[in-house]
Image (tube, rainbow, N blue to C red; front, side):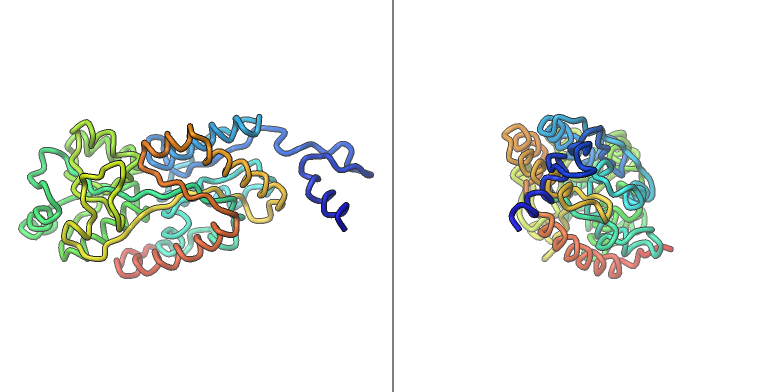
Length: 324
């Protein structure tokens, strides 16, 4: 039994002898593609590129990032769901695509539980409510009062319809009893560009993407959307502290592969991912961007995806933004 188990475990490395196995190539023996379903410049790209660089070093094989934006991240996610399950095409999983998209769109084109093999979680980070410095509000309470005095006149930008930043904005509007006008962009980067240019007054943006501009005084952060304050922006209150009780909307990142990817390949990638997350370099880079590292097993991530989808499905329904 022990020899049989060892042989199975080593198949992926091409180390187990026997007919037809001598020519087997170890995994990985060619470039791996990490699909990030959003444009460059957003939080997913920031986190994904840090992880890809370190995992490439540990694997001794390149991991190239392929930004496949569109449809709130569901376009690139659908591509990976239909890719060959060999470990050479993997996805940066994200709350917006694995938890929100399947509830927002009736025909999203994939099932987050059935069409992916979780590799492991990377970490989580809250969104931040940021405004242009010229916008005449300095607190969430002032924003709510302003929106009530100008109903339907306050726009907010997001990374796209159905993304975490979009649903978080709808969630906030309903919780605060105000009306906001959603302006969708093709990613966090373009939304922040327009916010910095004064074309929109406010946006919900992940801390990893917004904090540098907040620190530089180019944007004003009114609140973070998690239950506790961010260590990166400790002076910024939570939504609950700012007057919206019980508000909690954090986003999570992880890696997944197409369903059917061999378990030895998943285990290899999980081992390397966890080693990358344990490195001082990655801890520093992600820490500077406000991401709390939360490594775990493939089973841990599968369980989380299930729970996260259920939570956001309720928020999508309450927000009334389901789309065809």
